[in-house]
Every structure is written in C-alpha cells, then in structure tokens.
Length: 422
Image (tube, rainbow, N blue to C red; front, side, top):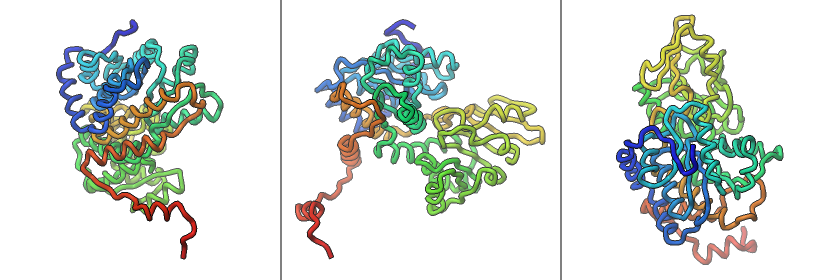
C-alpha cells in the first residue's frame, strides 16, 4: 500500500458516511469546542499521528479535530468487525484522512493495515487495544525511535501496556487515556452498558425482561452492562474473580455466583473481562439450549470459540445477521453473536456520540499535552493530567447546561488550614 494511499471497501459510500459523521458531531460539543481552538492555534502542527481505532462516525470527528490542530493523520481499524465502511469512505473523500479499514477484513489484511499506518512515519500513536504499539515494538522497532508517545483508549490495551512497562519492554511513553475519569467512568459504564445491549437486541430481537443475563466481570464496563440489563427487566447474575468487585456487585443488588453455577441458569451471557476463555467447554456443557453468548471485551478470546466448535455437530452461520448457531451432540443449540468480537460495534454502532465526546476530547487534549512535553516524558504508562480531566468535565457540564457551586473564600481557607476542629 503506497504512502498517502488508502484502502476502504467502497469510496462511493462517502455521502452516506458524511451524513453520519456530521450527525454525530451534533452530539459532540466538547470536541467541537476543542476543534475550533485547534483551528486557530494549530498545537499539533508538523506532527504525524498514526491511529488504530474503531472506524466510526465518532472517531471520524476526533480525526477531524486532530487535523484541525495541524496534525497529519492516518487511521486503521482496531477490530475487523467494527469499521463503518461509509464512515471510512467519507474520511478519505471528504476530510482527506488516509484510512486503511474494511469491515470484515481478514486477520492478514488487518495487520497489513497496521503496517500501512506505520508507513506514514508517525510521531504519536493513538491505540485501542495496543496492537499498533505491539507491532512497533515487535515488527517495526526501528520506526519506534520516532515515537514521542502513544495514547491507549481501552482497558485491555492498558493492561497489556502496563505489563510491558513492568517487564521493562516498553520503549516509549504511553498515556493511559482509558484510565481517565472522563473516559472510564462514563464511556466504559454508560457507553458500553447501552451499546452492548443495543448489539444483543439488534442481533437477536429478544425481549430481555425476565431473562437470566450473566455478566462476566464487574469492572466499569461490567457495571454498565449489568445496570442496563437490570433496567430492561432482566434477572442479572455477575461473575467475578476480584473479591472487592464481587462485594460491590453484591451491594449493588446483583446475584454473584461462579460461572460454573451461572452457566446452568443463564440465558444470555456477556463477557467484559479483558481476559481469555472466560466462557469455555465446561460452561457450554452446562448451558441451556438456546443460550446466547457474546463478548463486549476488546479481543475475541473471552469466549473459547475453538472449544465450542469442537463440541458442535453442526455449525450454521447467519441464522440471523451476526448470529451463529452451534448445534451440540445433546440436541441443544448455543448461539454466538458477532463471532465473539465486540458485540456493541459488530452488531450495532458502538457508543453514543455524547459519551464519546468526553473520551475523544480527552484524547485530543492529551495529544496536545504530549507535544508540549516533547522529549521530556519518562518511558512509562502515564495518567491523564488532572487539568485535562477538569477542563473536559467543565466543558461537558457547560454544554449540558448544568451549573455547579464554587467554594467561598471562607471554605477555601478552611480546607487549606488545620487549626479549626471540634
């Protein structure tokens, strides 16, 4: 793939994609305000950015913002099933962003696209799952010397990057955007919660009220999924390995059980752990006929699909769009959604724009922060600075028409002193 080229499924879809991008932009006021400032000040002028993210209409507005700031941007998909082909086409044709992403692309093409982005010689990378960072470390190490820093958007990616830092293998700084409060408290909880159920409902057209829904993992994503499922009338069971998170789930009113028990009663299983083989052979063997299994974690390893395939006497693809039926030897069927990939993006359209507004505003400001500290960041996984978090939160409240109190001078003095007490 030539430098400055692109690879999208159908360039003729650009008009449709542009409509979707501009529709999402209406619900992303914080990012729009940052884009307006970036257009005036050009804080990213001369910076080349390589981005590996879900190619959605919300991501497109982040790309527009980075370009407005003066950056040269190239984009590839962070998941083979999350690309919106119309959005990819519009980014290329209407906004001049080289995009390398096709919905349903093979694993081989996925990695070709990663390399195509690296061919643009980025100074800053933006990742969603750490595949771009891993490729730079393991396959294109010479280009890694040009990287000022990277930004990571998802829990799974941060886990991988902290492991690299802990083992001494990380070779450039990373900003853990996922760990920002303006990201995980909202995007992971409200975004994943709503969009995951949206994906399940679009794929199955089922009624959730009265269904036994099993949520594997009670991190911020799991909290959101469990909360939304309960709101839809489901009977929600939570599985956990962390005693603190399990205790929190109990006190939030959920039934916490081991997966070995949940497998017997569950009708819908949703994994959001970031770990491997959370649902596996012994669980499939206990499930009821008609059980639906899906994943909303970043990688397609949370469900042991090879084990499910080995148990099946017959596999029927596309019994509905994004639904595969596995007919087992005991005359029962288990239904897998979206090939075990992110159900909220593969079977639906991902997070609502209003919640991505905060996540992507944080990304844009973190990019500016990295450029201002060029060459001065330690090789480590860094938290998003508090001033960025505060700025994004204030702008979001302003856009929502919400006012908050301010400390009085007396209160400021009281908090700063220790002489007043009982």
